[in-house]
Image 1: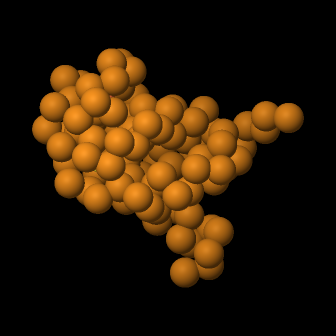
Image 2: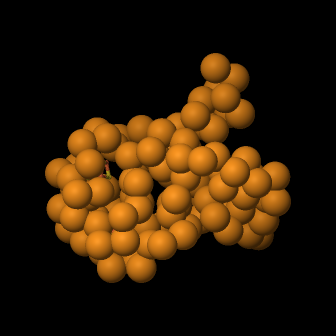
Length: 100
Ligand code: SF4
Ligand code: SF4
């Protein structure tokens, strides 16, 4: 069952660094990613904005695979701050899940 976690939406979207709403799901970021990460930034950021915490946590590995190289960001037509968004998700996962 898919569960929406309102507290997760609030936590992620209230971070001033998180700016994924302009994403048009064009796929350019995926095409240029040297790690061939399929889910970042498009799907995982969308999951976060929809409060689908379990979906994000299912793909924690992708969040940590990112090199923060910004190849995707440099080619993003919507000026999504992809690396900052990834850092934001890592911050959430580190604190809430791993207790760091
Ligand atoms: S390149 Fe930018 S607008 Fe396109 S899918 Fe990626 S984050 Fe969204
Ligand atoms: S910042 Fe992360 S998602 Fe973007 S291109 Fe680099 S490795 Fe891929």
